[in-house]
Length: 120
Ligand code: FES
Image 1 (tube, rainbow, N blue to C red):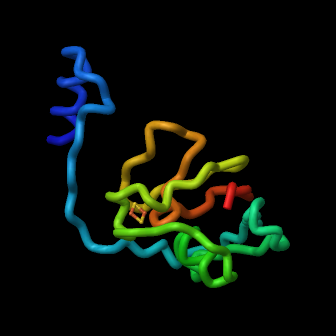
Image 2: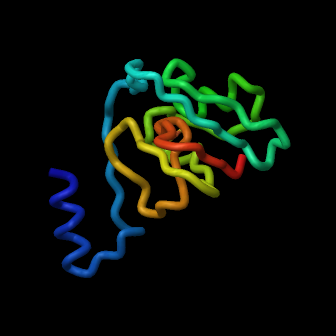
């Protein structure tokens, strides 16, 4: 319903920036299936690239476990305080919606789909 209302407002000329919504949901957990392994680099941290598997959780959880300083707030994909620039690679957001800017990911919801480099 929210997607339909948002699309209707945009179609009527309301700027996306002026449209706010709020969704309440449980914290998401990454799928624990498969043998996925991707290299994640935190470019600003100066840290060596590390191997991510689904057991490491979201990119925020993974970065924090490595000692990378990353901003966060709600941790459920609402506040966008964990937004970080995606310098390369693709991610998926566990809460089901993708940021408008494909070059940005919400680290508290994002898991890699391939090797990624984050500006963190
Ligand atoms: S911490 Fe709030 S959206 Fe990620």
